[in-house]
Length: 469
Image (cartoon, rainbow, N blue to C red; front, side, top):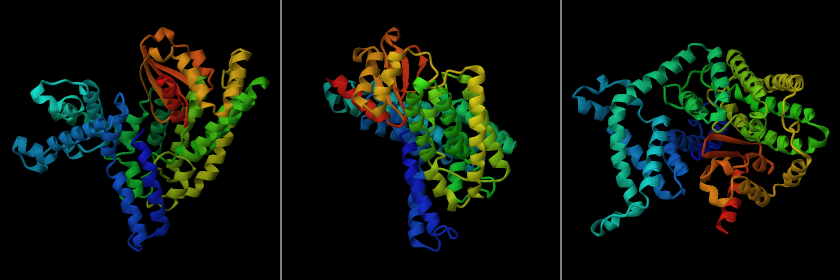
């Protein structure tokens, strides 16, 4: 999520540029051209941002050396597997080189490069070499080992990448061939994969230039097809700006009388984040595991929204997510089509979400926020923590994780604190949830993800302070 956090800057610059010159896209205004070019400097380098950001994010201590390692890995792989290099290895014309190598500079390879850089950093940052090589000991050895690993990865990719690329392209083409139905299928899978964190891999196929679709980049650059480009982003706006907020209100109405205040604090903050920025995890994780059937309904409704928007047609785009900020900025984008239709569509989906959620919750007695069977003491604690007492929340979460001595590694992403523990049996999920957070995920035996929301950094910082004491 670190490189993704760079994209709003591009969105703002693009939006200003297109508002200044909605017809010429910079050709009639120096200020417009300046903004658009500045934005493209970020969008055009998304794979590099992924390489650097992933490497920092996966490093054990976020040291800048890991960023350098990720960049080294990216430069090695993309140079060794470029079309010109392949033509040299095989003694053929560049035109005869498989198309896969012409697309080696993509988000998928960026993430892979970042993982290699982070892996080498974590493994070799404390390496001790003989005295005559001591200058290259420790962190200075990381780039050397990264280069060696990147060469090995390039040799493997030389044989494997054409098959991976073909599979991604075929998948993308099959979805494209389905038109609005394909857009709906993609949006539904996008939501369904969020609990596993795999939706980013799916997004890389449709939003970026991994398989030639590049819906996000083409929407803002104007290189796409008017009426087509943007179909894999538009359908999220009615859901994130209207549908989920109505669903949250339905969950609040369904909460037990004594727990409405607790539910309101959680759902109101999540609703604002979803509407304004398009960050939906605080709401989605509040019921994802408590009521998985309701989350499936949400995924299906998202798919219907995407299919409907693709069919009408209406086209809007985003650089970060489908919230109010990106919605407004995309009005004058080159590929925007009927963006005002998002409002009536969103209002319709708000009504649908409210009644479908209300009926489903009551009919199947789902344990959405405020309907759990927690005891009153835990409920009172949640009320106390509703005022953003990050220190107290961090203390409770740390205790629930088994104390600082039980933490092997601790990091955070956009909305979650990610922890590797020494003894999984010491983790008390109920204790963690009593801090007021939406949910806890256990992806593997010794890994715990504490879903916090958009204020995750503040709680993570407080945990670090507590551990340092």
